[in-house]
Length: 459
Image (cartoon, rainbow, N blue to C red; front, side, top):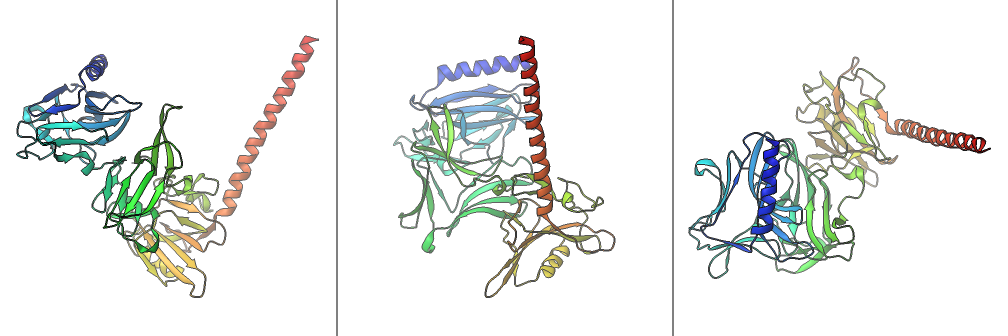
């Protein structure tokens, strides 16, 4: 079966090199065979259309890929090797035996499986569609006899924004969830643009850009220099620019890290490279560390269980202690001084004490952590934010006025514990430095002994 997959892939690449054209007319159909047995990592593509030959160009492909024990059938647009649009981004079409792309005579674009089962469609039947075209911008469009666009991929963004493409308050970029727990999104609000970590029904922002003077945002547009913000009268009033001279080819929301980047093509390195990233520090990434880990000042991850001088905490990282902790009889709040979170919660209360903040979370079955902030000044404002996940925890400098409160199994005596991160971080740093120093000295000693033996041998 693996040999069959090898021959199928070679057949598809031969088809890609010999059969690409600029458009597809109504009535066109292409069929790909789906392997009978599941092959982990299998990816077969038939390239159908491509733009003019350039340093890097766009191509359209019909794809069959192995995903979670099944095969998905999708229509894709590629910029070189980067997938910039995918018909199955939000909802995959799984099939067996066959993967069929058809532009019907009535003008509807279909993805079908066996027995004419339709798994995806554009819904453009009866609108006079005559051709499917791939434009130089990378926009895949359905047009009528007058070349008027009836459907386009630019209206259905995935996790990539191409040069010339817009993103409005009605649309967003999203990553593909690796599980049902988390996914990232890049959203346009009227007063800001922001990155979000979506967890169940809740969402937490971890990066924001807010224009000055309270200007309302209607849409953003990607240009060769970066992306620009426009108001309701189509006037540009703010922009975020690339840090390189090469033109920006696309903006992408990274599926693994949740970072947002502008990318240009480097002819020297023959690949796409980031010319701007929203987050440049590892500890600012929302899921840099595992659940119930804290990102330290040295950009390392440390399980919060190690911060407590109690071997019977009742939980381990990264599993945590969420299940069964509801109410003060089963749980208590562990305080981490000078610890914050990169995640900004919309569930907050102001002018509450640290004790009240801990009590509210303790008695809320959906709350597993809280962030207490004391903003010193004339009013000494106290803010308490609540979370349904223990992620994005970050060590802060001493005297930050922040305390991160984590719900943990209650120990005997029910005394709330408080711990300082600095002692443990210093211990880790000293140990790490000691290991490095030992390796350096050992290497130097070995070199001196080797040199002395060589000199004696020559004598």
